[in-house]
Amino acid sequence: MSLVINHNLMATSAARSLGSAYNNLSVSTKRLSSGLRINTAADDAAGLAVRELMRSDIASLNQGVRNANDAISLIQTADGALQVIDEKLIRMKELAEQAATGTYNSDQRLMIDSEYQAMASEITRIANATDFNGIHLLNGNLSSTTHDGSGLTSTGKLKIHFGTKNDSAEDYYYVQINNATASALGVGNQAASSSDGFSISTQEGAQKALASLETAIISKDKIRASLGAMQNRLQNTITNLQVQAENLQAAESQISDVDVSTEMTEFVRNQILTQSAVAMLAQANSLPRLALNLLGA
Image: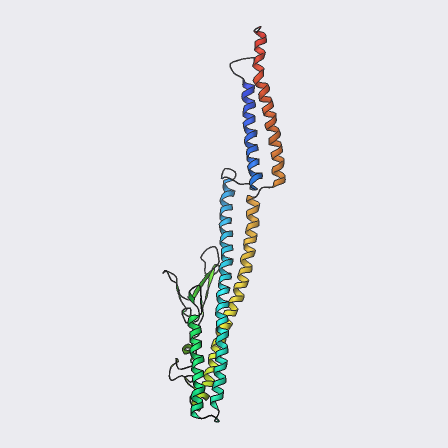
């Protein structure tokens, strides 16, 4: 190589090597400080796309777990109210049994019927008052077999969404709760006048009410059994969602997270190369001064 003073090719080469080593050192520093292998799309465009899709699914699955837990809380609210209604129905059957015997006169049966009707009114009040986040649970609003969520307020059975998409086989199912008011159960004077459980003011009426109350208790138990089965299903759904989220998190980590031991090795290597390039650039910049010796300077 000729000794020239207009161009310093060795310094140019050293500067290029320094720039490359310094850029690599910057990337290693960024990865080690963030803990991520992919910080920008330039690091791994395909990996970034896959990672972001995984992150969106993980966030959706975690929210789905919260949705399912909220649904369990709703079911527990409804079941708690039905437990109180159960107590009222048992008391009503006790009163009907009392009024069905012939040792009471008409005035006494009217007093017994007064408590009977009060229990029926309380059942209706509980059914109408039981709500979760403003959603009434036992007044028949959720008893429809269809669901319409197109409006600001959804109607029909309750849709519990927990999956990452909108596939009915995988991402949601419905909670349907039948009407638990006294009229729907067929007891008390709020029911149809032809209902056997309408009144226990007469001995015959009290005797008929016993069968009607038996049916009402069975109907209430069917609602509770359905809610219990749905709660167990939601618990299993939560477990499955958590496993999915955990596995996706592991896969996302494999793509996105930096291997600290490997990257630290690269960091030290790039650090040495940078320091070496700086030293060689300083030497290369001093070489053209040799020409001065030939010029007698």
